[in-house]
Length: 377
Ligand SMILES: Cc1cc2nc3c(=O)[nH]c(=O)nc-3n(C[C@H](O)[C@H](O)[C@H](O)COP(=O)(O)OP(=O)(O)OC[C@H]3O[C@@H](n4cnc5c(N)ncnc54)[C@H](O)[C@@H]3O)c2cc1C
Image (cartoon, rainbow, N blue to C red; front, side, top):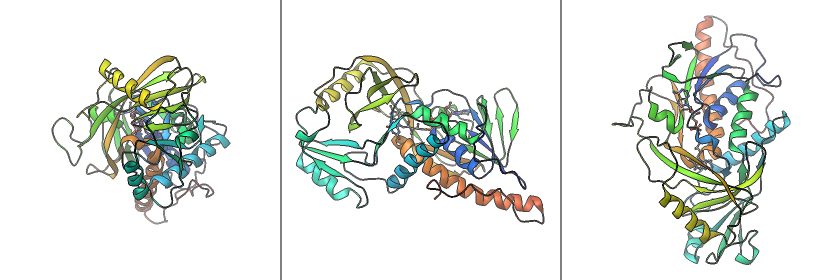
């Protein structure tokens, strides 16, 4: 990918820290972006296979699960996600998205009471009656929780824009192994840098190449993998994301066409990446859940996308001296950029010290970050 001339990484005074990022999904792309903001020279090694971040539509949904419990970082992740999309748009990389809010139907009063107890105070929300539903809601949902700060994004477009704006040198290859300061490609070429961050996702955790400090057996990282599928629809069955076990959401596909998706991550967790489409019984489950949610399943199905997500969050330095940002589960787009920004900040402290000692006398002279904006923590 040619570097973006507006990339925030053009200051070159003093020694320039270099970074190898293995894996170019939302985690790796976000690391590239925030590292470039610090002026580092970034090389991204990406095999371009099995990328969960190609999910056609990703929800930015702060409330997951059945209880209303919310990740403490969800609000910060949401704010950063929308700020990033605005920043990319300002640089000429428009990423299709809808800051529409997210709708969460609830099946009974007890579920609503649980959510009311557990929703964090800072999270904006409203309760709607079924008659106020903005889409053709099926019967059986007495309460609708509306989360106005959520929405959806064209996931692959966001990842591509982050990488382009970072100006990272992209190597389309698989890293066979890596350590604290280098990565070896499958053809034997060795790349060197001041630090290495592994962001390999589900497929990469199955390929191996890493010596993890925990876990055992066939998945030494101690991760769990879970496949899911989205049906691609000719039109959106709802004007905003609706999530209750399955999700319906608007979409803008990679060919620019607008439509919708119906999907979920519903297969049983496995200890490794599973390729291939869903079994028929999974589609049966998907349809039955969709029919229970929406009274209008008329949009035509135009395709199917299947991916695998990785759970078991690992961020920061690993025992081998390299760093990781992985295992983001169902929150890759909600939390990935936020965790990448934090990781790059920590790494900056370490690289600054290392460059200090390399220079022997003068203080570290890492290029200053760009003018502070809402992207900076
Ligand atoms: C059906 C489904 C629906 C989802 N919906 C949502 C949603 O609505 N909202 C949300 O936030 N999240 C959602 N997720 C989760 C989200 O997709 C993931 O959390 C996120 O994409 C993971 O990103 P990642 O960068 O960690 O890994 P990935 O996107 O999987 O990227 C990993 C990349 O690294 C490359 N790679 C791996 N190992 C190597 C190596 N050794 N050398 C070179 N390259 C390597 C791979 O080829 C791949 O390109 C969903 C997931 C699925 C499966």
